[in-house]
Amino acid sequence: MKKKLLVVIVGPTAVGKTEIAIEVAKKIDAEIVSADSMQIYRYMDIGTAKPSQEEQDGIVHHMIDIIDPDEEFSAADFQVRAKECIEDIHKRNKIPLLTGGTGFYINSICYNYTFSNAQKDDSFRSLLQKEAEQYGNKYLHKKLQQLDPIAAQKIHPNNLRRVIRAIEVCIKTGKPFSYYEEKTKKQESKYNLLMYGLTRPRDELYRRIDERVNKMIDMGLVEEVQRLLKMGYSPDLNSMRGLGYSQIIDYLYGKTTLKEAIYLIARDTRHYAKRQYTWFLRDKNILWFDVSKEGKEKTISNIVNDIEGKLKYT
Image (cartoon, rainbow, N blue to C red; front, side, top):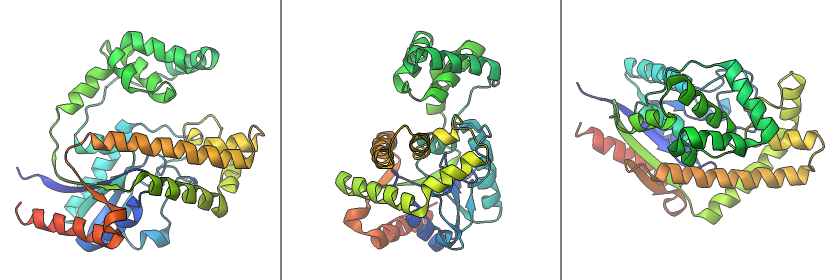
């Protein structure tokens, strides 16, 4: 059976994915499926760099504004809903264009990840959360290390949500969390994948990150966070602990100055961009374009030409 086409555009935050993906989508008659773990939330627009209706420029976007900030949403949930969007786009004889910076979301679609069927156990998770609050994140990470050293090596101690999920899977299924990750590596993609990565020199990317953070502040990030808190959303929610939001919450609670919060957002975003590069560089299916070297228009043209050229031979 002939595999259906899936175009994918990835890269670190602030590299210019959104703009380039929209222009590519216009030229190949595609609809965009967002793979961003923060843009799924309603009311969180500025801090997530969500494209406005004007920026979307008539291109249909899926998987944006689909849940409230206090709703649970896992990578497995993303996979189910994004696949439904892709299937619907194919049925209408259009091309799905998957784009974003959340590598785990991207891979769950591209490589048909098999997720553990361990049911969420809120009371068990709450217990682990309390242990982390009492003894620290590293204490919980050591617990994971004993259960699954491979997973512990890959998951950062501060990624508490994932550490808790990994421990939960180990306990509930009797199998290491890494067992499921290993299974995903062996899955062949169900799609005809055309994957493109965007890059820029590090100093230029970091400058763009600094500019983006300052722009977010000018656009009203502080007011956006204030509004979310007034709506009753707890600072302890996963969504509110996201990059940009947690730092502004600390400022609003008097733990830092605004200047310090801005510095921390930019610093942590740079660290995040570095982790994104590391993740995507492992994928040998990705064809990379240096946007700084090629220029935006040439990058768009190169991607479109590559897609059209490969489609001739499929």
